[in-house]
Image 1: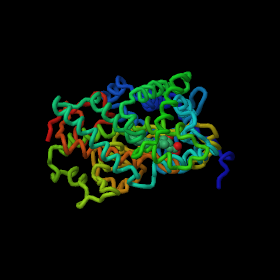
Image 2: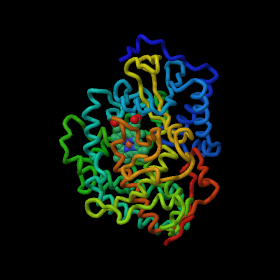
Image 3: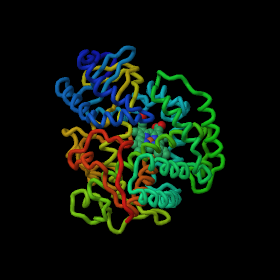
Image 4: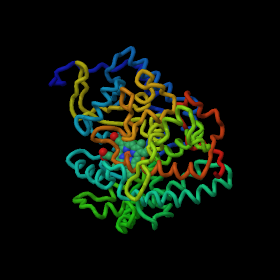
Length: 458
Ligand code: HEM
């Protein structure tokens, strides 16, 4: 094995290229709000198709500098941006060493509401915390043990929601979010939490501070109130909720109230992905009752017949799971997966020292035409039922990969696909402003906050 400390260091790219990467890749990624999206910025980024510029810039730098990570020498800290798909896989597989998941900026952000979370823990604390996450979320199972309860909750909440929006004739983001959060609080914490808006609002306050990462001080009062409220919901361990699954676990030294904030936070991007998928299905003629249409999307998106089911007869909904994955490929909700090097690492005869920040920039991996066939086309058929792409050479990593892969992935796909089934069986929809989602030329950013759908009851 190469001793990286003996190799010459990876040269930083020049100041002009560094300035371009900061302006076109890092600033828009941080500016949109990494922990809580900023609607005004999202609108602007979509209007200027900003991530396409970022992808093009990184492709051209890869063409001129070669496949090694692009090293940026910034005041106080060095970063590299990964531009090669094999390097991306290596970084994600090398979690938590030599690529620590508890990266500096992520730690500074997430400490606002979950200072002891697995995602910002180093070994040895990380081990049991990650294990808790996998056990509680039953990561390896397509159907979590509460799947039938999730289906019941989704059906109940969407029934009322669909009636309301059908009477209005449209869905706006502001209609969808309260419905989605009621589903999330019931699934995670139980019926009593259904209307606990205070819990979600306190978390939103903390998430907004988290956007500022190292620049924000801690709001200990809000954090303490949020945590105490969450702990009381967890203690209740309501049957049929994820809290009940937790109560049945031997959690050892891990306090679930330190780990569950990530779930409540991360369910919001899942709501975004669901909403964007609904729009994609509408723009591609998938919710107009044409369940056996002949378009590429229609044939790729339809599930097998008969639909496989899980415990309690819950349908697996492969076609809708694939559609959600495809929307996350197009618009990854974690565009920058961050790591820090824990030691010097070797890169094709060059070394990168310990303590550098590493950015795996998902939009490049997901939309680079050299890596992905028809990158700007909604093509759910590229995903197989196990949730891996069938035909792409590079990694597509909406849920990350390796030992840091999202342990909530199956719970997310279950909840989102059930929600989409409940929505599309009740409503036919079309996107208002039909130029926003041109098939085959989908925008690089899709602002969900200004996205509205015209709806009719079926
Ligand atoms: C669209 C929805 C979601 C996406 C795209 C997503 C994606 C991700 C990604 C990319 C990571 C890795 C971050 C990193 O390496 O820095 C992650 C971590 C994590 N996610 Fe998700 N997530 C989603 C929703 C959820 C939900 C709903 C839950 C729980 C119910 C969840 C639980 C977690 C946990 C606990 C971690 C930390 C894992 C660790 O410490 O190794 N996620 N997620």
